[in-house]
Length: 400
Image (cartoon, rainbow, N blue to C red; front, side):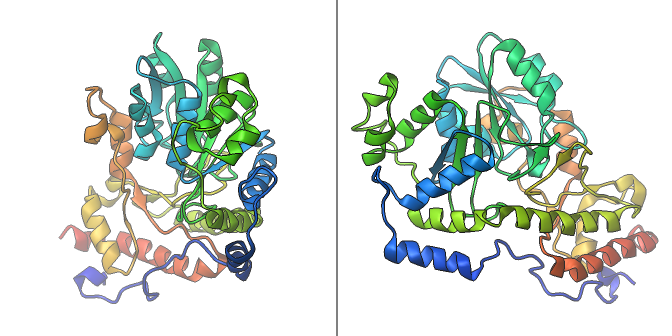
């Protein structure tokens, strides 16, 4: 009998079922060491920041990395570095966290939203091409929930029209597209390092690029003091070495120490999370009403930010998603809908009047489950699978 009808819940493990980020003694020691013995490098800013930036850039085979206080700050700096301003349009995904697009408005430009692909939720390349105008300054894409966008098509479109590309990799640390890491395709890539991300530094962000001019412009926007005096070398930026642009987007050295420590085991964390969630997906296959998230055969999700299966109500005789969630919650499951709706539904972005039917459908059918990340969590996954199967047996009860 279903728990909602008075039966015994399938899931015995008490919530929360997922703990992230993991913290090792090495992480604690790194933060304490920075707190007690931290020192500056020759350029006058924390040595740990420079070390973290250098190795993060090397990991992505990029020339420059810039640590900032949030992923949002890196996106703002990226747009500003590219010269986005009041007469410009920037193409952005409609299905993303709002911070992907809000800096466009902060710079006085216009975000032009694009619908998504029905299987991954990533931006639709055909929609990008359709919405390019003479005012289009750049395209920003989000590798949604860790699944890389269709980068070959998008790169081709940007190259054809001479438009800059920014990759928002906040969900996709270490993900790959056709064997190459995300963040290495566009002009600039931005990563959030907040506490829920694969690489968590409490609160921070990282920007990478091969373009020295873009790096210096981003640095000039977000920092001031000794670092600008030592690192601004181009005539365009060097004249601002005393003040920068007056913003303070640099990260705390304690966040840098924590992020750098965790970065050293990033690949191991990715491997374990992938194995754990791939196990979950295999167990869900064939269960009516639930579809594991799609991962195309030429990509890896890397960070796999969130586990977002799709609900197929037709397989449960039209049972509403609301009722489905109520029944599973009664079984002891930590399950919900996704938090962020398509951007056009938010007052900040609803001026276009366009329709986004694919994003609407994707949002209305997506579920959110714990991002199980460790092998030790497999017993809880097994309990979840039992609960999902139990609903298919009790479907007649659900409909009366």
